[in-house]
Length: 131
Image (tube, rainbow, N blue to C red; front, side, top):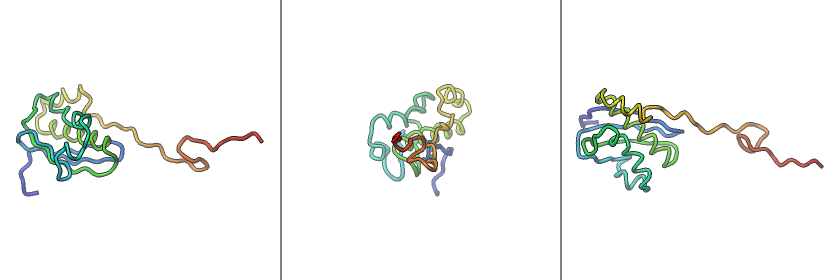
């Protein structure tokens, strides 16, 4: 990376991992080489990603460059929000309290439960017949 970044944060959710670089700018978010609205494709996911800026009152002050892999779009959006929050907290410690209060610094531990042997899924059973 030849550009100078202000801060870095790693966000995770389910199987998605987002590596987030924070740079001063105009509020542009680039994800895997595309603009965030092209990549995420849903307004709700776009709102989720921009939540940390609203909480810290830094809308339009930073540009975000992120590399995301694994999982689906929703998990990737949550991983990106987590990474942005961590990068903001690393950049300035006074943002940490408001991000923590909003719950953006907490890693969501929920994962897909593994499939067990002798069953078609994690909890599903094969059909039972008495005869």
